[in-house]
Image (tube, rainbow, N blue to C red; front, top):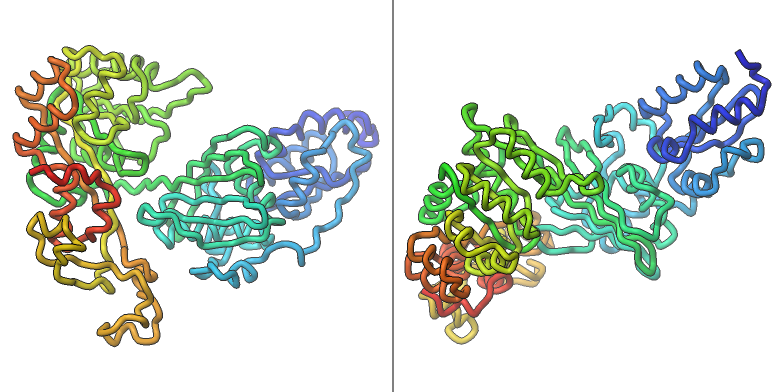
Length: 546
């Protein structure tokens, strides 16, 4: 065995063990080294993989290893310039002045603070592959780590679908998309933006030193016994990197189609098309309109032991037992089209293609539908009829579209009025012309100002200032608007003739299809949402339809 005092030997061995990839994945750096001892700084010294790594070095190199907890700033500062060929020049770095680091107490005092910070011992970081044990984080006191933990935890408390961490010229703002609307919750000092960004990138296994190119990653987090998956995207900008985290809900128990669609006519049509033995069913709508949730809910009903279901997704948003789910990996050449061609050899009964975005994917999906498979997919289009023209723009022959398609559904999400603080008023024929023309006599208004400034509210709101249920927004939760076009013989004939979207839509409405706008107005009539919400998400040129 080499002598422990052979410094060159130590350098060479450590160069192999402590490369950039290892430092970034474990969140560690070299603080100092001598002939008998190695001092490692770690953002989480109690992380099981860090402990395993230390044991490996001690046993294989025969050197004593000590650890010291460091902050995200310390790690970032030292890691960027870390040179394992000059380990002797590495000395202990000074602790960053804790007075300059934003603390959770300081954060909670900001003007925009709307919730209490969670204690770090109530939360557990999750590696994309391993679930961390809660005890590993009970001793962590680093303010940046605590702040990031609180930011992630708040997404669960607020019911957010996205988290936006945006560095600005003089501050960093944290916004949450709640019920489809962005709201600012934190305003953090500019000096801490790099540290918070670095912490999120480390958790997502992204290259912390790369700030000039966009990156995509993923992290898992456990909050109150609930596991949340986050899809992470970074984007360089003038004032630093913006990070957006999409919350991927994985609770399959929530996927009930009859809980999504309010009216029996649309529910029956969707179930009929979803139960077709073959063909293609397309769901369209903008990003964040709930397309994936709808398709998963249909798959959940068809998920039985005698049916082989395979999905191709980017990313896999829900985990469903009994369904084989394929994750697209574009950097490895596994895109939608290639995955779809491969799974055709897996004897599938039902196929879900997460998104049809190009000619090759669309053509392969159509052919699969014609060869005895039921295909579900999503497409970016405004409504049901324009989905047909979108396929034509992808150079899919009209005969192939008409022969394979069984139906199209367009959807939007509107906010549900708060059941506690909303109020009912008579329709004003001038102000609420749309409601008046559709025979709606009363509409429910969302509370949009402080309750203390309104009259005739129940005593339960005294001294509250804002509604405790919706935090003064007037809305709590969301509802879906659905436009369901079941392709009948008349519509199929129009598709074969390459008719434009308006002609197809007119035929569909005469066959009983309810437009997005009319569906929304029915929800207004039932006082489930507000007229303002329907007007916000619907094209008002539909107002003349049936």
